[in-house]
Amino acid sequence: MIKREHYLAQIRGFYDSDLIKIIVGVRRCGKSIILEQIMKEIKKQSNNIIYLNFEDERIKSNIFDCNKLLEYVENNKKDGKCYLFFDEIHEVKDWEKAIKTLRLYDNSVFITGSNSKILSKEYTDAFSGRYVSFRIRPFVYKEILAYAKELNKDVSITDYLIWGGFPKRFEFNQNDMITYLNDLNESIIVKDLILRFNIKNEELFRRIVNYVLVSNSRIFSSRSIETYLKNENVNGSINTIIKYLGYLEKAFVINKINPYSTKTKNELLYYFKIYDEDVSFNSLRSLNNRYDLSHNLENIVYNELLYMNYSLKVLNKNDDKEIDFVAYKDGKEYYIQVAYSVENEKTYEREFSAFNNLDNAHKKIIITNDEIDYSTSTVEHIKLKDFLLMNSLDEI
Image (cartoon, rainbow, N blue to C red; front, side, top):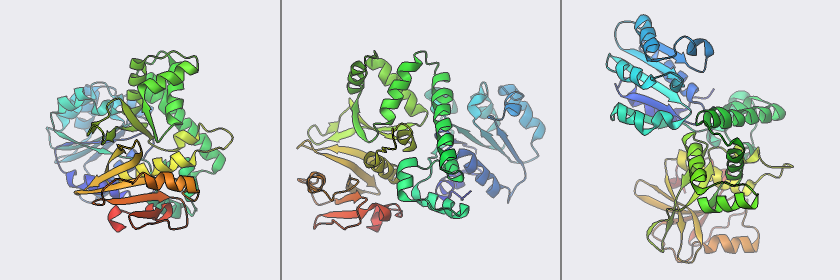
């Protein structure tokens, strides 16, 4: 497995800190690998390390609550600073009490979880600011290329647009990969959502999940989802819809950002744009291999920009045209449009006209999968294949 230096660099400065290191992300995005890579680095200076994976039933059945965990650590640690690694810690009853205790006694504690219950207010309040958190995501394309080289495989951009970046999937052939992704999807829906949140109306929940995940990179409102359900002769209140969307966010399945409107100079609180954590969530729900490459491409650009550490907004302009992303970092701001292709004249006009009436103080960018350079005097065109290899928009 490749070394995920992008994340390790963020965590490394806290290796010896008494702050609790919380590593979160969607199931199977690579959190356990990050823990292994941290342990490998720490082993160069210490062998006082304890690792427990609470997805292992042998461990979970014997170390199932706070007292058992404290007892195990006390019996197995050596003198001096001990480095504790607990994978999927939320499986342990009263785990937060154990963690609060352990950090007091010369232990450096690292924990992971697939559900943001681990970052919920009740636990973060209990830790009283004595923690740092790190969000891990599936592979971006640069990481895919590095891992594909390890595996002696070729992975095309189209493959990435359809099947995303869950690390394990690259180890399988096409049929086995789809089986793996389907099983992963079902595990997330059932274990991380239906069971964990005790969802009674499973049919309604699945209808909402399927609708949202196959409609990525679009503007939503709770009301529009309610209308969709009514058209499908399914009853679902707005409160239920909001609650279910919250569950998807808590399990890191979707990311939701609010548009910003130049009309009101304010956030549009009742509308939001949703992106899938991984585009495979969309493609698994596509019929007859009719994959939604256009919206998946925008979703991919979103994921890549987050990886580059940009803060993102969607801009709703006075002329009712939308700028897909306003990207902020280090005091710099970029306007970004995304389209699969602008070869068609109408598409070209639609996408480029979105930049009309915007000042030239900030760089205007359009990203497409075209081979031809469509740059103008005011808009920089970036080919997707070039964008995916960038580390920063400063490279333009």
